[in-house]
Length: 216
Image 1 (tube, rainbow, N blue to C red):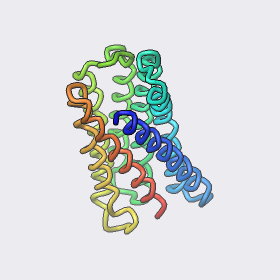
Image 2: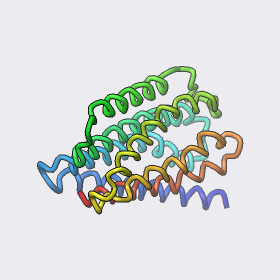
Image 3: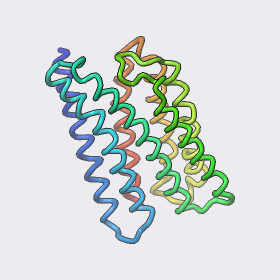
């Protein structure tokens, strides 16, 4: 049964990476000169690129069962994914700013940059112990505080202007759902590995966000 679930996870990951990459190129080259759509394309490719560093070795582990052999690359993959996800939300913020041009957006943009910088610096610190099987939960919480605040600012932007652009009206909800699925994994997956399954619906939400961007 475990092997069956592993195969399903591997197939899911392949489909996800392929879909995110295809959507990225479609958005990037489908409307030359359309800045928000091109930003969305870059955003999708950053997402796929970063997640591949974690999911590719994960699929190899599922296939071979040699988790300890790939422990280092799995840890580095998680670290890279954490950084690229931060960049993902910076790009999403700029898509919203470009479309809505909110007042005093420069101030809020600076806050988004600061939170992103703090998050990336925290992700780079050795105290995270990325290469261990069970990294410290407290550092997982610390590095995700600025990430959560960053995500809430982006969600707030799309919520405030949700009625101005019909195609983007649910982007704020997608962002909230992504964090609703992600935060329990940060807090409790070390104690109960089954909670890690929440990453599957989280991944589906990210694909939804990319599909929403097709309306740009």
